[in-house]
Image 1 (cartoon, rainbow, N blue to C red):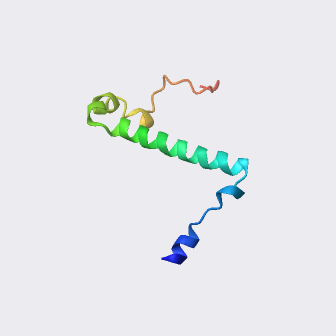
Image 2 (cartoon, rainbow, N blue to C red):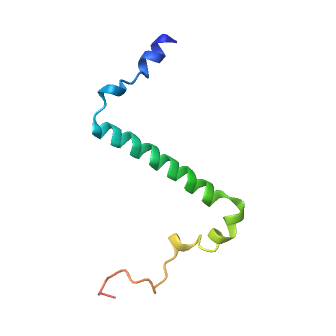
Image 3 (cartoon, one colour):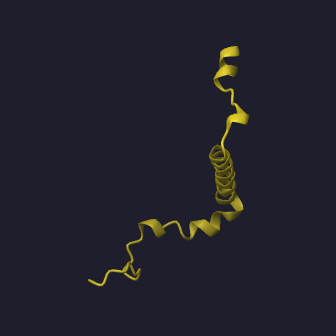
Length: 70
């Protein structure tokens, strides 16, 4: 078990400002993703998202893609 502890050892004092920003940003993004998953997968929000589930596959001509050719 000692080698596993040595493998995951972190020298907190040697971390630079860039290391801290990256660590904090990673943790914040992880927590935001967990919150988003809980929000989207909550059963009471199901009807709200079921209405729009076809949007990624919709080939509707009314969407303006910025093309001037057609």
